[in-house]
Image (cartoon, rainbow, N blue to C red; front, side):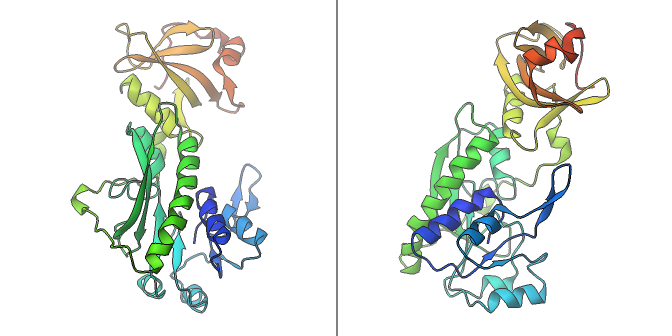
Length: 308
């Protein structure tokens, strides 16, 4: 049971290791892009390539959806970023239970956006935890873990790819011991739990009163999706990339352009400054700051403010 690209390596690894995948359960096709083209989830596409039946219930708790999954009589259910909470009846059905491949070092970052939130918080490491599923969010007993460093220039996208690959490796490494009854599950310390709910629109807007380090982490933690933004003269700029900059804020208010360099706009933060090097003005394509300053941004001046 899974939906996005993150879950595909887990499915592929199960198939490659010789497990019989009786079905893939994923979210329904959704409209994507400006033209709202109905698009299947990556897990559906992967399953169909292998001739695996695909179920796409709108709500897994619906009686007919439950009945369809239970009729398969699965020995084990593996979930990875499925996107719905499983009901108790489904959790208790397989003989070996339901396990989840979660992209954090639990009990930290329970929820739907652990990769984004770990980078935004400035964490130096993340990882994958495989745990039993329970009715509470990501709160089940843990079976195995792997730690993955967060590099200085990692984005949500690069860390997503690393954790996706490591999660698939950990899954096939964990299953033999699980099926043989050799793993002693480790309860989570619920008092240490932190949460990473889905990113809200308000969290995408850059708060220039934060430190340069925090702004840098926010931008990379939201790249390539949903992308940080700021405002200028009533229009939004998507901020694809910034670099930390050696300039001080020079007493300028946060959000003030304090220098115009060939490859970027140096913007003051609450402490320190960053250089905006890649952006996407509203209604325009993504571009380098160099191209922006040669064109639409050519009239910008030092002392101009963004983010108001």
